[in-house]
Structures are given as structure tokens and as C-alpha cells.
Image 1 (cartoon, rainbow, N blue to C red):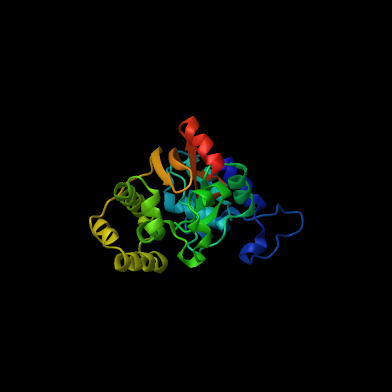
Image 2 (image 1 turned 135 degrees about the vertical axis):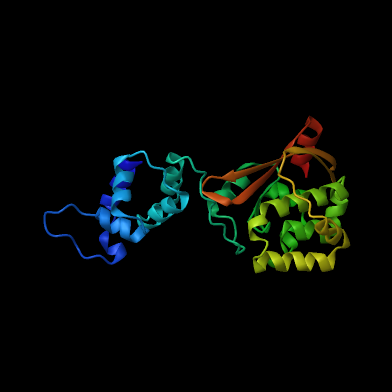
Length: 264
């Protein structure tokens, strides 16, 4: 840890903290006393930290050091890992935006496996042709209404599509609550919940029960209006460079479903 912090301190541009250049011939970067001042710790304590002394820095202090040294997300996570702390939670944007091009290309390359990308508030940020064939309304819905939880509880086509709508809808509600626990006070999330409470008695009753559940891969049955019953397995992945997006992928469980997916 000491060697890592020392290397980043010496690489830190002084101008980033509005500090004057060092005299000619001196090592570039920040001085230890400057880092300690900016972090709010003593020079002695920070020196011990770089020297690898047997001290136990708090997470708050390490977060302050990471901010002062302008560590990247990966570097910040590495620093906390060296000290035995869990990785920092990524900053999750709430604004609805389309999936980035490389995520959309990944969805498209899945071929006849239905797949889509969900943003932090469960807005559908991207999907492939196979998912549009499974659920055509995804492409017909206005972007502002293209939210998975909203569609599950308000679109009659979803009820017809799902074999166990009563169970699956409440499962989605519980997963949504678990995933948005730290952001339930955000106006964007509150607006969605308010609209759903007004639009769906099932949502209102379920939400008031405070269900919470983590995602588990599971078998799902869909009743497609054209090709018939589909038996799929429901998976969820996250891209390392976009942890704010969850990728949902359905894979066939039998040859009949595989053939029918190709025909959808």
C-alpha cells in the first residue's frame, strides 16, 4: 500500500490542487505534508502509511486519500482491497439513456436468444431483434414509458405472455426494491413508484408488503401468440465497464423452444 500511494503521490499533477511548481531539480508531484493537509491527517501518520507501518487506516481516510490523489475507480477499489475493505459502490446514473454501442452489439450477436439491457431504474435501454419478436411492444412503447416494472404491471400483453404473471410480477417487484434500496429517495424512482401505485392495485398491494429478493437464474415459460409455448432460462449479467446496466438473457431449455425461437 505504501509503495502504491507513494507512486501515485509522485505522479499527481500539482496543478490539480492549484499548487505552485516545485523548484527546479525537485521531484514532481505532491509532498507528503501536502497530501496530509489535503486529507486532514497528520504528516507523521501519512508518512507511516507510506512506510508500511503497522497502522490501521479507516475507510474514510482512505477515501479521502483516493480523492486527493485523484485515483481512478479501479485504483480506489485496489487501495481499499489492500486494506481489507469492500469495493466502493459505483456511481449509478438514473437518467434514461440508450445502451452504449458495444453493449447493443453484444445483444445483437446473441442471435435468436432474447436479450435486453436494463438501466438503474429498470428502464429498458436496449434489446435485440429476438426480444422484440418475443415482446413486440418493447419497440412500440414511448421511451419514457419503456420501463420493465411499468410494463409488467400495466401492459395486458405482458400478462398474456407470462405463464405465471401473478408470481413473476411480484418477483420483479421484490428484485426492483432490493436493487434500488439506496436510491428509493431519488425523485426519478419515487415518481415511478407513485405512478405504479396509481395504475396497478397489484403493484400497490405488493409494494406495501415490502418484499425484497435478490435475482436468481430460473426457468420461465412464455406463451407466444405465434409460435406457441417457450421454455426459457432467465439469466442476468453485468458488463464490467457498465455496472449500471444489467443484461437479461433468455436461453432455450429444449429443442422445441430453440426451433420456435428461430421462427418467432
